Amino acid sequence: MAYFNLIVPVLLAAVLGITITSGRHKDYHWRISFWAVFISLGLLLMDFSEIMSSKIITYNMLGWNPPLGICFAVDLVGYLVMSLVAVTALAALVISRREIHDDKKEFYALFLLLFLGLAGVSMTGDIFNLFVFFEILSIASYALVSYSGRMGSVASSVRFLIMGSFATSLILLGIAFIYGSLGTLNMADISRSLTNSSTTASLAGLGLLLCGFSFKAAAAPFHAWKPSVIRYTPLSLGLMFTAGGTTIGLYTIFRLAATIGGFDMSWLLISLSLLTMVVGAVLAFQTHNLKKLLAYSAISQSGYVLFGLGIGSYTGALYHLVNLVIIDMLLFAASYIVIRHFRSSNLDRMGGLGSGNPLLLASFGVGALSLAGLPLFNGFSSKLIIYIAGFEVFPLGAIAAMLVSVLTLAYCSKMMFMIFFSNMKGDSRISLDLDLKLVLVILAGLCVAFGVFQSPVTDVMAAIAGSGLDRELYIRTVLGIGGV
Image (cartoon, rainbow, N blue to C red; front, side, top):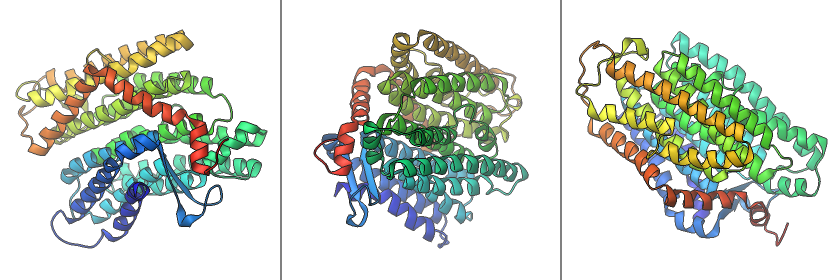
């Protein structure tokens, strides 16, 4: 029954994504989308105890066993990522109800297809279907970016399409190299084959996959698409691309490094991470557009996850990934309120909200301090684990990461000042609906809770990371064999 609950998100999103264009009741399309994602998340949570005990749940399509058959394989890491994607989608839908008019029925059909692609990537057990799900989410993304029909959105979508097609081509070429040299597409079978021997073609294929996945994660120097896309899309979509899409990109890099293996990519990931951290933070400090600042900040923070993967601190990397999703949801929800009030994402046109908006001020403050990694907030807890591991493996890299946190505090302070404490530029009091208040309170509370209760959260993340690193268990479970 567990495997059925795990594939329901994919089946439900696929069916409703096709049929949702019917119906004329007010909020019909939004309600269908919301309940589809909510039910998917509920079914995932129902299987929590079972997947914690069994570690990996597999399902072979039509009874065909891997490596020949199509296989879904969900371990604790994949389960965590699926849950994060579903929660992100719910938060995005709360915002979209106000941003997107309900007559935009195709928007929600595309939204569900985007959710389908994101969920599918976290579940699949072979690299070709990984490519298929990436294509589904990419096509939905291109259409959603251009959906408003405005010139900036269309131009951004075209650039996104061109760069995304290049990244997808790298992934497909990498798959071809791997299949041509190893004769298999199943991740567990690839890992077993690479354990015994590797070829130049297979290593080249892994390198191409890393480049393609880095684009999906918006890691520098593959990050250029993200700020433009976030700037010209509704914040609900920006949240899906930032918290959802980046999470999936980082997950595939984790899967490549921890499950497939083949060669030591530690220094590649460390180099990529430091470049991503620095470039994102510098550009975030320079911009005066709130949406672009959020995009650049997300790019910079994903560098910490990559740094954790590179130095072998998988617990810290997963902990920070979870924290980033929470922080992104909080800041995007709060930013939606601010941008709606000022009818602009230009920070120079904002100001004066520090009086009369305590909840909004507190939400931005908690999000900013969490991003910067100050004590008692969740960003500090995960960064501390990464710093400690970094000083053992690569001290200069750890120092660089700490300096980037200082720069993060600087651009977050600039953002806070321009929104709340610069000159009054309009009515300062903003009326908030109950659901938005609840979202802000819950997310801000999680930022504090994950920072204060660091020890139990770290234990959970360590258990999840340990499951993802058990390559032998993954191979035995997926392939159904007694040993490697």
